[in-house]
Image (cartoon, rainbow, N blue to C red):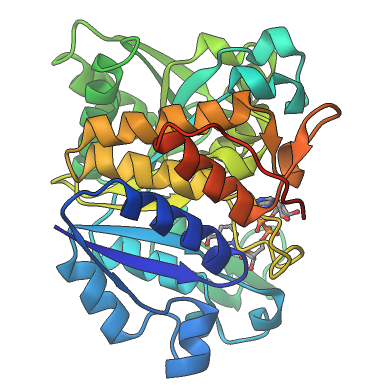
Amino acid sequence: MKIAILPGDGIGTEIMAEAVKVLAVLDLKFETETALVGGAAYEAHGHPLPDSTLNLAKAADAVLFGAVGDWKYDKLERQFRPEQAILGLRKHLGLFANFRPAICYEQLTHASSLKPELVAGLDILIIRELTGDIYFGQPRGRRVAIDGHFPGAEEAFDTMRYSKPEIERIAHVAFQAARRRNKKVTSVDKANVLETFQFWKDVVTEVHAQYPDVALEHMYVDNAAMQLVKAPKAFDVVVTGNMFGDILSDEAAMLTGSIGMLPSASLDKSNKGLYEPSHGSAPDIAGQGVANPLATILSAAMMLRYTLNQPEAADRIESAVKAVLSAGLRTGDIWSEGTQRVGTRAMGDAVLAALSGKTITTTTTG
Ligand code: NAD
């Protein structure tokens, strides 16, 4: 087994170092190879996803990705911006199913902006379709309007579209994931306004016939956004398109208090995947050694579970993370009165200590 390690930019390199330490201590048989991606790759090779990095990602069994981006690249032509590397990897690796769990650890309920009773024990899974929708639909561009409210004015346009096989495959993924959980899928659409999402709803309903043991409900995206903050625990698996999933998965992430705690996976049809924290490169705290590495460490656990077939090792990492939280260690993003503030490296060391069954102590702050 080979894992491609792509740390990226900003805090990406800091948090990845901790995840790599954790993987190394598990004593499992796999090779790792590291490559540049994002802004770091643009600086070195003139492209955010150079061929060498893409070829490594294709050849590997799984990719562990840190984060990319920095405001200093915002003025680059779109194709050279660091974020294009993520889109390129998704496209070239055929990653179409994005898993974004939103789990609220008992020890962190106070970090949520919602009342503790609404989020305590929250464990939901948002599954976002990644390759279609308005983000990729053609045609798109700018032109002079020939009709609409202001004919002759400059306008921009994108195209929302989904084919039946695209909807079918993500629906299967969602129903199968629900079978391993609480057997309920909420399909989120905007069927009342959009043709594309009436079609989405029809196809999901058709696929559901093959999963009579799983409950299916349909919900409009505006209602889903409200229900996520009103009664989030009523959801189990949420499946939706690329744009709605982008927005709702960030909203769900915030229910848990910190984006620094949340892993994610993007899978292809044979469960090969790219695993990454749900957050970005956090240029505001990069280089300070204060970023929370737990989302990346938990992403490594997801990788062991979904792609590398090592569920016991994944369980061990997840238990070690809970032990560290129970011991009161917190990075700045999840810190609260009465807990001990630690930096990135100390948090990684504490997970290592928990994995080796040692007492978790640290005096490192920062
Ligand atoms: P961000 O997720 O990087 O940061 C948002 C806020 O959360 C910041 O205040 C940051 O300090 C904090 N934060 C994020 N991760 C943290 C962690 N592990 N520990 C502690 N605090 C953490 O989002 P942003 O500021 O909107 O974007 C910054 C850059 O990241 C941009 O260039 C953006 O395009 C890029 N980005 C990349 C990805 C990715 O690589 N997958 C995802 C989102 C954004």
